[in-house]
Image 1 (cartoon, rainbow, N blue to C red):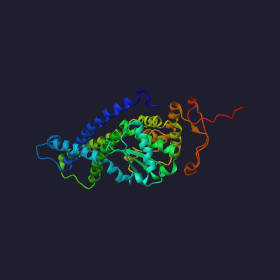
Image 2: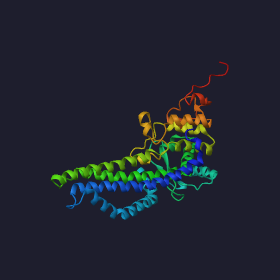
Image 3: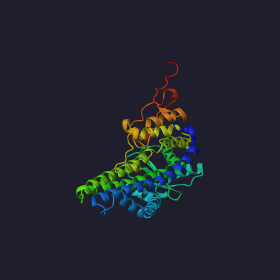
Image 4: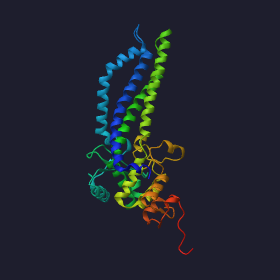
Amino acid sequence: MPGEAFGLYTHQRNNRIRSIALIIGLFLLVYLTVWGLILVGYGYSGVPRGRTVSSAAGQLFWSWLPFLTLGTAAWVLIGFKINVGLIEAVSGAKGIAREENPKLYRMLENLCISRGMTTPKLAIIENDALNAFASGVNDKQFTVTLTTGLIEQLNDAELEAVIAHELTHIRNGDVRLMVIAVVIAGIISFVGEVMFRSMGRVRISSSGDDKKGSAVAIVIGVAVIAIAWLLAVLIRLSLSRSREYLADAGAVELTKNPDAMISALLKISGRADIDGVPSGVMDMCFENDPDDFADLFSTHPSVTKRVQALVQTAGGRVPQAPLGPPKMAERQPLPEMVETSASHGPWSRPAPPAGS
């Protein structure tokens, strides 16, 4: 399985290091963005006579630095405090009590007990899509969110595999890392969008040689902001895809059922997109439907690769026949499984009948 060479505990340690690095990166990107905004501002309004744009911008930036640092720290703390509520608001998720779905809660609790984990909360999104995600940054916040489509269309073994996958993300620190990445992308994207929308409504007020200098300052400022925005996007895309392979492996370790994970992946494939949910939240989901060229820039490996990894390293088996429409698959037992050779990948043909 990709990423297995360094092991689970190395992945957990690396996630802690990445979390610290991302928070430091957030501060640097905020500083870079504000520097660009100051250049653009002086480019439009001009600077006092006898001053250069760079000297005026530098003086203003250093005077703002303590406030920028405090503001960014406050943003991180607020993001950590309200991230679950914010994600629920943009995704339409609603928390459920044990009485509303005791079967689902028992399934979650049994998996948590087997690993000595604190049982997270449960939330539901009323949507036909088949998907799930975990959110939160500590034991008090951790929440596993499932769509109604997922609950209705997967059988118990498959649903347990998906929940175990999300619990592994919590255990590995992936969820905390993704929340930090969303916080970073959110603030930089917001500042950049506001700046670019407002630029078209402002005109350069200086003239002559000053106007030429102002135009250069504006170009440099816009370039700096664009670089900060691009780096924020790359931070999100740079999160290792190995986390998904490791979460699949962790789910198999919890459930002892690689076949259930494979059949869940095959049922979910092509039906995971939750309408109206921001891309940052979709990046946290069990599946984000990457395919073809888009797969190069996705935060998730394709279902094909994930199934292949489960077959080759976890002893998983692919159904002999297509699973059919999800609703039928829910009401009927899974087709008979056949062993698939790791050397032939997950899409090998079924073994011929005995004696043929």
